[in-house]
Length: 120
Image (cartoon, rainbow, N blue to C red; front, side, top):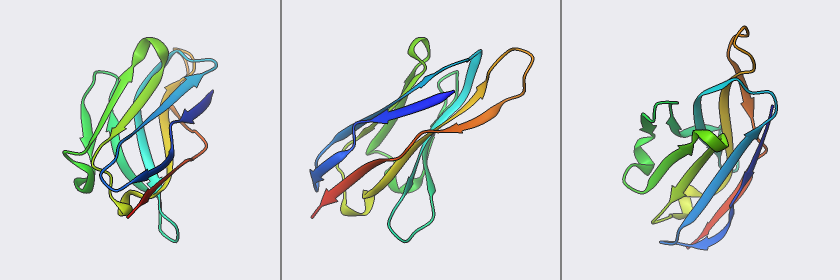
Protein backbone atom coordinates (compact mmCIF):
# COMPACT_ATOMS: atom_id res chain seq x y z
CA UNK A 1 0.00 0.00 0.00
CA UNK A 2 1.36 3.42 -0.96
CA UNK A 3 0.14 6.84 0.04
CA UNK A 4 0.91 9.84 -2.11
CA UNK A 5 0.24 13.34 -0.84
CA UNK A 6 0.11 16.57 -2.78
CA UNK A 7 -0.99 20.16 -2.40
CA UNK A 8 1.60 21.69 -0.08
CA UNK A 9 3.29 24.98 -0.80
CA UNK A 10 4.02 28.51 0.32
CA UNK A 11 1.14 30.79 1.30
CA UNK A 12 0.72 34.06 3.16
CA UNK A 13 -0.99 34.37 6.52
CA UNK A 14 -4.73 34.12 6.03
CA UNK A 15 -4.42 32.10 2.85
CA UNK A 16 -5.68 28.64 1.99
CA UNK A 17 -4.28 25.34 0.80
CA UNK A 18 -5.85 21.99 0.04
CA UNK A 19 -3.91 18.79 0.66
CA UNK A 20 -4.79 15.50 -0.98
CA UNK A 21 -3.57 11.98 -0.21
CA UNK A 22 -4.41 8.97 -2.34
CA UNK A 23 -3.88 5.39 -1.24
CA UNK A 24 -3.12 2.69 -3.79
CA UNK A 25 -2.18 -0.96 -3.84
CA UNK A 26 -3.80 -4.01 -2.30
CA UNK A 27 -6.68 -2.54 -0.31
CA UNK A 28 -9.74 -4.30 1.03
CA UNK A 29 -10.90 -1.51 3.31
CA UNK A 30 -9.53 1.73 4.70
CA UNK A 31 -10.72 2.55 8.19
CA UNK A 32 -9.52 5.80 9.73
CA UNK A 33 -7.51 8.26 7.64
CA UNK A 34 -5.73 11.24 9.08
CA UNK A 35 -3.34 14.11 8.72
CA UNK A 36 -0.41 14.78 11.02
CA UNK A 37 2.14 17.54 10.95
CA UNK A 38 5.65 18.12 12.21
CA UNK A 39 7.06 21.58 12.68
CA UNK A 40 10.83 22.11 12.70
CA UNK A 41 12.28 20.95 16.00
CA UNK A 42 8.97 19.61 17.26
CA UNK A 43 7.29 16.24 17.53
CA UNK A 44 4.74 15.05 15.01
CA UNK A 45 1.20 15.91 16.09
CA UNK A 46 -2.24 14.81 15.02
CA UNK A 47 -4.12 17.44 13.01
CA UNK A 48 -7.35 15.70 11.98
CA UNK A 49 -8.85 12.27 11.46
CA UNK A 50 -11.86 10.90 9.64
CA UNK A 51 -13.42 7.47 9.94
CA UNK A 52 -14.74 5.37 7.10
CA UNK A 53 -18.21 6.52 8.08
CA UNK A 54 -17.25 10.19 8.00
CA UNK A 55 -16.84 11.03 11.68
CA UNK A 56 -14.17 13.67 12.15
CA UNK A 57 -11.91 14.90 14.91
CA UNK A 58 -9.52 17.85 15.03
CA UNK A 59 -6.78 19.22 17.23
CA UNK A 60 -8.09 22.32 18.99
CA UNK A 61 -5.69 24.68 17.23
CA UNK A 62 -7.25 24.02 13.79
CA UNK A 63 -10.93 23.73 14.67
CA UNK A 64 -13.01 26.10 12.58
CA UNK A 65 -10.19 26.60 10.07
CA UNK A 66 -9.39 23.13 8.70
CA UNK A 67 -11.78 20.58 7.22
CA UNK A 68 -10.94 16.94 6.63
CA UNK A 69 -12.92 14.91 4.12
CA UNK A 70 -12.54 11.72 2.12
CA UNK A 71 -13.69 10.02 -1.04
CA UNK A 72 -13.94 6.32 -0.26
CA UNK A 73 -14.36 5.38 -3.93
CA UNK A 74 -11.00 7.01 -4.68
CA UNK A 75 -9.27 5.98 -1.42
CA UNK A 76 -8.40 9.62 -0.98
CA UNK A 77 -8.38 11.96 1.99
CA UNK A 78 -8.33 15.75 1.79
CA UNK A 79 -7.45 18.55 4.16
CA UNK A 80 -8.84 21.98 3.35
CA UNK A 81 -6.84 24.55 5.30
CA UNK A 82 -8.20 28.08 5.57
CA UNK A 83 -7.09 31.13 7.55
CA UNK A 84 -3.59 29.73 7.71
CA UNK A 85 -1.20 30.99 10.37
CA UNK A 86 2.60 30.86 10.58
CA UNK A 87 2.28 28.27 13.34
CA UNK A 88 0.65 25.92 10.81
CA UNK A 89 4.01 25.65 9.05
CA UNK A 90 5.46 22.16 8.88
CA UNK A 91 5.60 18.89 7.03
CA UNK A 92 2.16 17.32 6.70
CA UNK A 93 1.85 13.53 6.62
CA UNK A 94 -1.17 11.45 5.75
CA UNK A 95 -1.96 8.19 7.50
CA UNK A 96 -4.32 5.37 6.65
CA UNK A 97 -5.42 2.39 8.70
CA UNK A 98 -5.77 -0.30 6.05
CA UNK A 99 -6.99 -3.86 5.87
CA UNK A 100 -5.26 -5.33 2.83
CA UNK A 101 -7.58 -8.35 2.66
CA UNK A 102 -10.66 -9.39 4.59
CA UNK A 103 -8.53 -11.93 6.44
CA UNK A 104 -5.79 -9.54 7.57
CA UNK A 105 -5.74 -7.24 10.53
CA UNK A 106 -5.57 -3.49 10.15
CA UNK A 107 -2.13 -1.97 9.39
CA UNK A 108 -0.97 1.62 9.55
CA UNK A 109 0.57 3.24 6.48
CA UNK A 110 2.18 6.66 6.08
CA UNK A 111 2.73 8.87 3.10
CA UNK A 112 5.80 11.05 2.57
CA UNK A 113 5.45 14.54 3.96
CA UNK A 114 4.29 17.49 1.96
CA UNK A 115 5.63 20.84 3.10
CA UNK A 116 3.38 23.71 4.11
CA UNK A 117 4.95 27.10 4.75
CA UNK A 118 2.90 30.05 5.95
CA UNK A 119 4.67 33.39 5.77
CA UNK A 120 3.83 36.26 8.09
